[in-house]
Every structure is written in C-alpha cells, then in structure tokens.
Image 1 (spheres, rainbow, N blue to C red):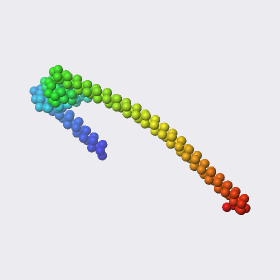
Image 2 (spheres, one colour):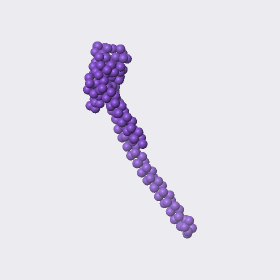
Image 3 (tube, rainbow, N blue to C red):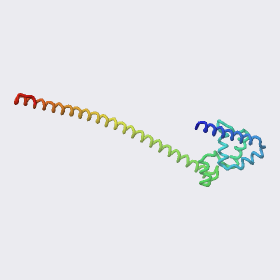
Image 4 (cartoon, rainbow, N blue to C red):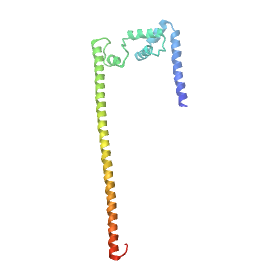
Length: 178
C-alpha cells in the first residue's frame, strides 16, 4: 500500500511539473520573463540548476530566461557558498571580498575534510588495535579455560584417588569396603 501511495505522489509531482512547464511554454517571452522575475533567488537557482542538469524537464526557452535572470541578479553559481557570502556577509558577487569569502569557505571545507580523514584514520587504527586486543583477550580466556578445565580434572582425579586410597585403607583395616 505504501508503494502505491509513493508512486501516486511521485506521478502527481511529475504531472504538476509537466503542467507547469506546459503553462510556461504557452507564455510569450515577455510573460515568461515577468513570471520568472517574480520568483525569489532560491527558486530561480533551483530551476536554473535543474535546467542545467542531465535530466532536464525545463524547456530551452525557459532555461535561457533563467540563465539571464541568474546573471541579472548576480546569483553566481547559485551555491550555498554564494548565498553565504552575499546574503550573510554582505559582499557583492565578483568583488575581492566576495572572492576572499568564497576562498575562505572552500579552505574551511578542505580543512574540515582533512580533519575528517585524519579522524577516520585514527578511528580505523584504533579499531585495529581494539580488534587485536580482543583477539589476544580471547586467546587468554581460552588458555585460562583450558587450565581451569585441567585443574578441575586434576582435582577430580585427586579426589577420586583419595577415595580409592581410603577404600583400600578401609579394606586393609576392616576387611570390608567402606
């Protein structure tokens, strides 16, 4: 049942996208430009990225208008880094501060990646050490169990031997068994 609901939802969304694209395709260039201009930056970027993707459901004319709108608004590559530098830090795209901001974000990301790799390497090495330790502990436990079994067996033998000696002594003294 869940698969049917998921399939229905997916088909509905695809259908809505197709209908929206057909509606945009029926618009004149002027209407389409006004329609696209009403979108916020994130929506423009989302559609622009889709239009540049390998699976493109957006008509070429719409793609061209989106491309011009991205350029007109100076949305750069529409990445989160772009929006961080422009919206959060207040730099204009193409300025030295903007370029420095993008570089610092990339450097930060590279450093985070390097730290992650180092941490994963350390965790991996620690896992090997723990694994080796666990194997050694298992060997020790196995040896201890073997020794304990031998000792228990020896104790049982000693107890049985002691009983046999008592029986022999009883027979020699009393002439009877126990």
